[in-house]
Length: 103
Image 1 (tube, one colour):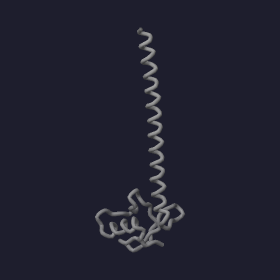
Image 2 (cartoon, helix red, strand yellow):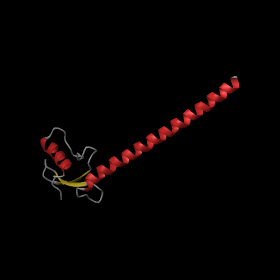
Image 3 (cartoon, one colour):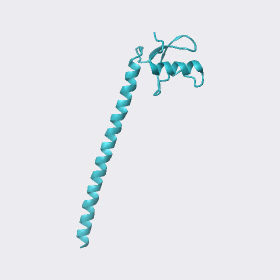
Image 4 (cartoon, one colour):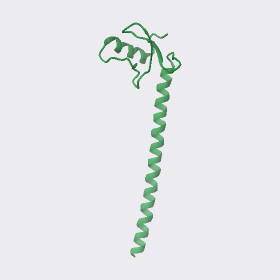
């Protein structure tokens, strides 16, 4: 009886382990797909703006009224973004709305 119980438990634990591994692999695959979709959407949004040879967005800075090639963060803000400054806030909003002045 002990051998049968041990064998039964071993089989059931192995099945549970396999199901867990499959569920984890599926979840990892879904997370990878979601990350790729997010990156593609973000890149597509950036693709709407003119870019330089290094893939940076070519915008005209509202604060200093100068041409800049900048990278955008995940929220669509340029690298030169200064939180709380009205020109920078307006620039980030214009980038999100695709109304920013470009060159």
